[in-house]
Image (cartoon, rainbow, N blue to C red; front, side, top):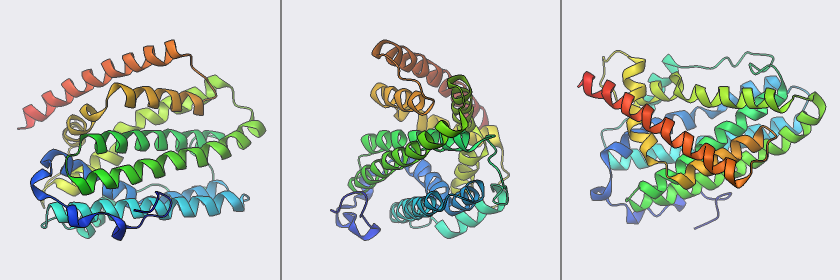
Length: 278
């Protein structure tokens, strides 16, 4: 198979697909992830508006969006193979009809271009760790191979945005505290409508009404338990690096432990919501 910078959907080992090894819970969150990834071109349009004078970055953002869209198409293709009744195109239309970013924004919603790049690094941190964890948890061979490719792409994307972040941080001079505040804020947004509505759009029956707490919880109880301590420690290191902070091993492990506790609490709360809805 080609390396992660060159792979195509046709390169995946489709002849090894094994329906008997598809996890129904993983299938649901893969469907949701496919919609989010496939929506990347809207983010590229937004980034082009935020960085109007940086032609190099705008070109890099367009290439990033092309690769992210490929992730969505590949995940959607796998989901269709796992569930022939899944209509990826209809699910994406449903998602777009109910969730959209402001592609007409002329400036970053983070307050600065440095802040925007910190936010992008946080997203790539989350996705690289998520697909690593998902691939480790998956038993189906094609999904495992796909997650390896996507995780490698997302790590490369983190490095891409971090390189531009270094340039703009030197120009704009945000303090470490300002950078950390932006980074933690973007992490908190992982529980907003983007993922919850994607889960709803991909999995809810026709005519269902969107209930954010219910669908956010349904997503959370399936996604959060995938993370292992090593996944969380990597997240901690990458998040703080984007914020200009190098952590010692002690602090990296201490924050990882705290993050693990927080995630367990969130999963317990989400499970209570799911059980109540059932």
